Length: 331
Image (cartoon, rainbow, N blue to C red; front, side, top):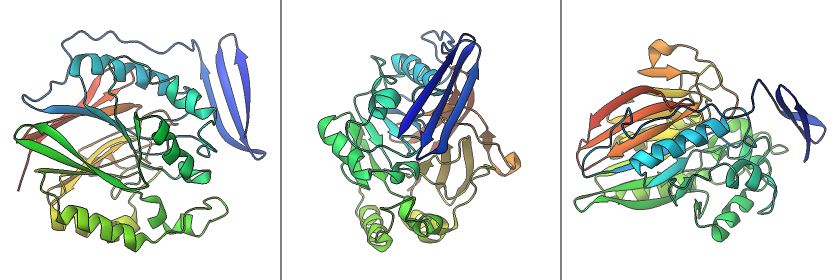
């Protein structure tokens, strides 16, 4: 992959060419410095007592351009006040075509040189997105074996996380890419996409069936429901995963893919959150009336949870709290 940089006195423009075709074309006028918004120790969202906090975002790896660096700066600001236990990265980790190896320059340009804040957590739980499938998925698995901060032990995995001495969370990170027929029919672009999705469904079923933790959160890249004009509902996931979420009482499904911030109406006791504002070009909203909140904005989500409640908020690139919501845990 070739990268061509053109710098101008009034800003910058990046063009990434992939096999002779345009991959990313991102231009920004004005100063290239990130927008800063000093936030005092009194942040607009408060953590729940006797709980844990974590952050989440997807669709982020754009070589530090567009709004990726601004989001990274606000992650650090909020981390300084909230002390998150971990960060969820919901796929599309490297635009435009993933990484080729553990030494691909994008590791530094899109990850290592960006998320440098000293208050950021030491654990990043990472999912795979469709752009990651266009080169080496194995490289992202191998990178985690050398860099413990990058947690991706396999294409799908689960982790028990302690909240306090009375409660815990079961975090289940899935790989939604092989379920989508449009990718399966395009093995030239997604050479590693043909997998046994039935095996993954059985694994998800088994994990949920045997989960004893009070909270159950599933992370994937693609949404089941979305009001984004860039990416809407995903039929394959609705059919194959939706019934499992309802059967086992999943509390939250967290994803990206639509380059927006959305909180969709719950189905049963499952809330659906799209946090796709990590850096990639923003997508429009098709119909915000069908969502509890929907905004075409860069940013990330903040979650705080204890034994009884879950609190969530969307934070934009300037550190503004756009939306907050809280729910009680059921069954």
